[in-house]
Image (tube, rainbow over all chains, first blue to last red; front, side, top):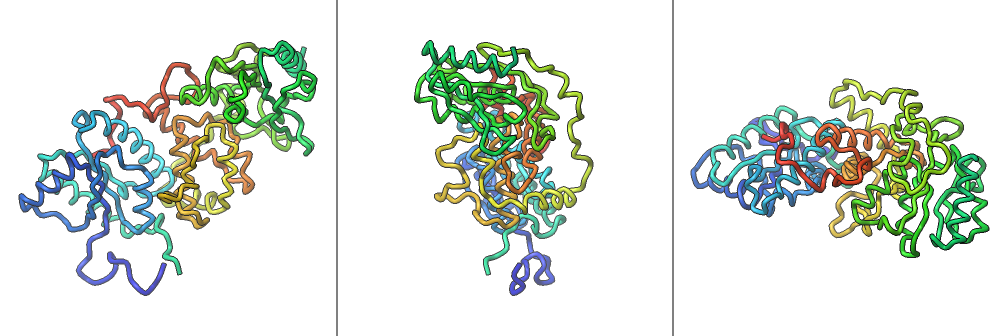
Amino acid sequence: MSTAEPHPQEAGSQEPEPKIVAFLCNWCSYAGADLAGISRIQYPASIRVIRVPCSGRVDPFHILKALQSGADGVLVSGCHPGDCHYLTGNYVARRRFAVLNDLLEFAGIDPGRVSFSWVSAAEGERFAEVVREVTEKVKALGPNRKLVKEPAS
Amino acid sequence: MSREEALRKRARELLESKQVVMVVGHRAASTKGKAQPAFIAKPEDAESLIFDETCGQNLAGHLLKVKHLGKIAVVTKGCDSRSILVLLKEKQLDRAQLHILGVGCEGVKEDGKLSDSCITCEYPNPIVCDEMLGEPAPGDRLQTLNPKPQTGELTSDERWRELSEDVSRCIRCYACRQVCPNCYCPVCFVDASQPALVGKTTELSDNMVFHIMRALHMAGRCVECGSCARACPMGIDLMKFNRKAAQIVKERFNVVAGVKEDDAPALTVFDPNDKQEFIR
C-alpha cells in the first residue's frame, strides 16, 4: 500500500464517504436512482453508478474486479423477481449471486462488502434507503483491505 | 475374474469387433506407482490396460480430445461417470458415441494413502454405464471411513487468513484446470486478455480471485473427483473451494452435480422460489 496518499476514508476529519461501485439495471434501479435524483431525495454521495442492461449482465468478475481496484463496497441492484425486462435475467443472476455471496463469505470477505438489492423504477425513496444502508454497512467495515490490489510500484 | 482381467478382455473384444474405435483407460506410467491415461486403438494393446488404486485420473475430460474419432469406449468409475453426465448435459458429448465400461472403485491412493476426495466419496460405482466389469465396489465402505470434513465456526478474518495461506502458495500453473474433466472452455477466463478478467500475477489478491472464480465456475458442475488437488504441485487443498461450492449448490438448489441423468446444471436454470435472504 503506498503511503503517499491516505485512503479517502482515513484522510481528513470530516469522515469522507467510502467508495461504492453500484451496478444498476437500466430498466429499474437505474431509473429508480434517476427518480431519487429528480425527486431531490438526499442520499450519501458514496456510489459510482455503472449502468448495465440487466442484473444478469453482472458477472461475478465485475464485482471482484471492483473490489480489487479499490472499491470499499459493491452494490448490485436489479428488477424485482418477475419484473425482468428480459423475463428471467434476474432469476438466473440470483442463483449466481447466491453462490458468489456464500463463496465470498467462505473466503472471509466481510458480509456487507457486497450487497444485492431489487429496486424498481418507481422506488426512488427505496433506492435512497438502500444506498444509505449499504453506505452505513461499508463505513462500519472500514476500508477494503483484503482484496484490494497493491498499487504497482 | 478380476476387474482388470475383465477390462482387458472386453477392451480387446470391442476393438476386434470394431464396435469402438478406441478404448480410453489407464496404464502404468513410467514413474512407479503412478498411472497415466491410455488411448488404445489396437486390440493387441489392450493388455497394457490396468485398473487399480493408482488410476486416479478422471478420464471424462480426455473424451473431448478423441470424440471426433468415432465411438469411444471409456473405463469409468464413479466420479468419471458423474463427469460424463455433466458433459452430456452440457452437450459436449454424444451418448450414442460412448460405450461406458463401468468399474467399481475402491478409492484412489497417493503414496499409499487414500486420496482425500475418495474418503468422502459417496459414488464409488458408475451412475451410468453400458456394462459393469467385475463386481461393483461396496458403496458404503468409503462413506463410513470418515465423516465429511467440517469447516468449523471461524470468523471472517480467520477464514481469510486460513485460505490466504493456502492460496498464496499458488504459482498459477493451471495444472488444476488442465486436469479438470469439466474444464473445456476454448478460451479459459485466466487466459482471456480482452477483457483480462483476472490478474495474472501471483499476489494474494489475484490468486484469491482466481480461486474464488474457479470455484464459482465449478459450482453445480464439480463432481469432487479430487483430480485438481492431486495435480497441484504446491499441495494446495483445492477441494476446499470446490467442496464449499458443491455444498452451497446442494443446500440452496438441492442439486448434486452428475448424479441424475435428467436434471439441468444448477446455474443454468432457476426456480422462482429460490431463497433470496441475502438480497435486500
